[in-house]
Length: 171
Image (tube, rainbow, N blue to C red; front, side, top):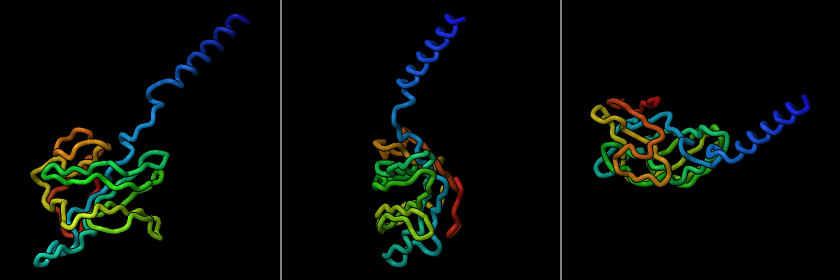
C-alpha cells in the first residue's frame, strides 16, 4: 500500500511539473479583443461641402474578453474593401471592459459613465455605409498583422448590410 501511495504521489508531482511548462501558459494577446458592435453610418449626412461631419459618430465597439488588462496598441482594424490604415493606438482596456473606437480625433479616456473611448484620428469617414458586397466588412487583426485586405491574423469579424443612419449593429 505504501508503494502505491508513493507511486501516485510521484505521478501527481510529475504531471504538476509538466503543466508548468506547457505552451498554453505563455502570454498571448491573440483573441484578447473582439468586435461586438459597429456603427458604420453616423446619423445625418457624412459631408457638407468639403467638411466631414460627426466623424466620432462612426465607430465600432471592442471588448476585452480576458481576465486581465489588454493594451489595444497594435491591433489592426481591416476592412475588406479598402485600406483602413492605422493600428489602434495604445490604451489599457481593463478585463471585461468595452471601448468605443471612434473614427475621428479625441483623447483616449474613460468617461464618467464608465465607457472607454479610443480615437483613430481620421479626418474622413472610413467605414462603408453599404456592406452588401463584402464579407466580412470589418476585421480586427492581431498586433503585427498587415492591413492588406486578407483575413490573415483576424481574431474578430463584423458584417453589416446596408447601414441605416445612426444604427448600431451587433456583430
